[in-house]
Length: 216
Image 1 (cartoon, helix red, strand yellow):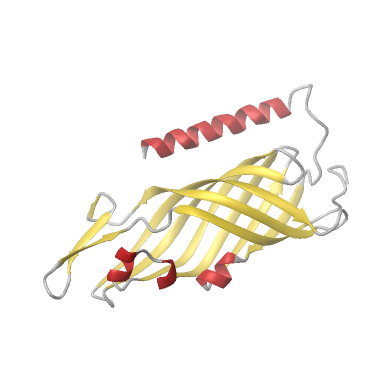
Image 2: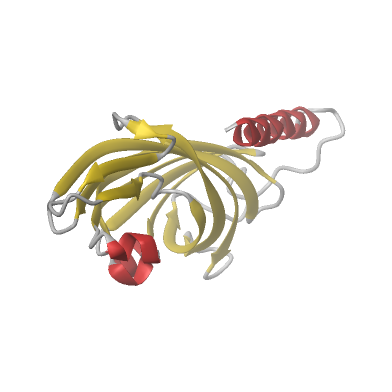
């Protein structure tokens, strides 16, 4: 947790420093897509997780603000660890939502830190033990947009992030592990940290307004 907090603090300091530099008298010319609103939908979720994820962003000249919301995500067996498979885990995320903030380096490239809360439902050993809890993550990442033409607001956004686990509200944990006895009297353990790790995605996006320059 200490390492996570240090990483997030360093990221925010860097964003603040970059924002101050962009507002100095020597700042570069205004970026395209300044003061623009963008809607998008991620493609990994429907293809791999069976759900949907929508996101909205607003860009100033150098800062970018976003909100992302996903629903009905299922972590299937092909995406589970060996330990999770041994528990016959049925893992779903009915919802996942949260804001983010970042810094724009160019018209198309930015870095962000996203914060999310995830509703998690875990059925263990075919329902012998059922958990419902909320987990919290923070994910620094890099984003790159590609528009289909210079005058088009339609394009794709590529992203790569690492999600740090910040904890959850499940009771009775030993660290992040939930320990329980199965029907045969054998002690089992389930790691409740299921929302973290490295993730990449691609989204279809549409930016509203004329996009040749920030002044349009």
